[in-house]
Amino acid sequence: MRAFVLALALVGASAFTPSSVRPLRVRSIIRAEEEAAAEEAAPVVEEPAPAPAPAPVDTRAYLETMYGGLGEPETGGKIPPMAYMVADMGTPGTMDFMRAAELKHARIAMIGFMGWVANIQNVHFPGMLSASKGISFESLESVNGVDAFFSMVPAEGLGQIFAFAAVFEWYEMTHKDGKWNGNNALQGEIVPNINKWDILGFTEGKTEDDLKRVKLQELKNGRMAMIGTLGCVAAATIPGSVPFLTGSI
Image 1 (cartoon, rainbow, N blue to C red):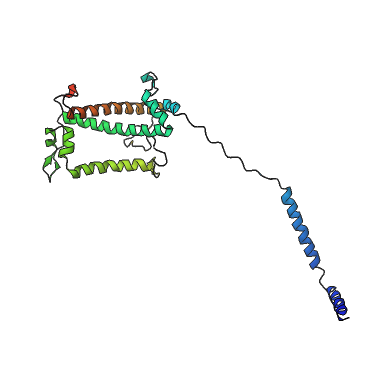
Image 2: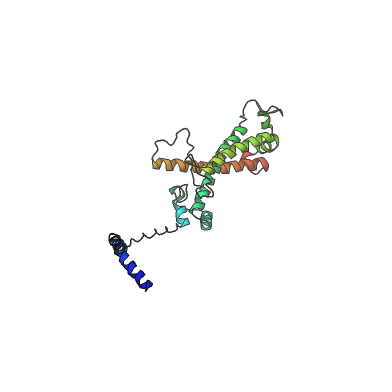
């Protein structure tokens, strides 16, 4: 009997519950259902497919487009077989690396060959090469250039030469267009003329055809200088190997 009376009391108490609570709860349920329906009806936006990877460039075809006499009218459009062999072993990046190395050695060889010419003509700097060791620039003329470099130039002088060259080498390997670029070798960005060294502005205002002609001239002169420098070294170390230079070096 007591349980029955308690149940009646609870039922009566529910009549005093605010009526606004139930409509709010109903509206919340309706709103959630509407949002779920809107999400289902929303169109699915598909992400665009990634662009296809570029087709690999044929290294031989890339070689034929490079300036420098390879495929140029000056050579009859002929490319040495060894150049094709190098192309088959690498990629277009390999050919850019080889061309950059060729240009670097060509420029050094042009300076070196002019040094040999100056030595043959007995042209030298005034003063002392090493005051502490009593070595003058004039005394280097008593021996050939190879012996003078390796036997008469002090170790400190050789260190200065290599340090000077190392600064340029470091700059070339870490900069691009005159700005820091990290390790160009590891990034595969070693390309010919990666930095502009035209301090005197010889290329300013040149057209593309003019630049191509100048670059070709530089490369050809550099190739001849490399051959000439090797000839001078051979004449200085192997007597009679270069008859034209016998007695001159």
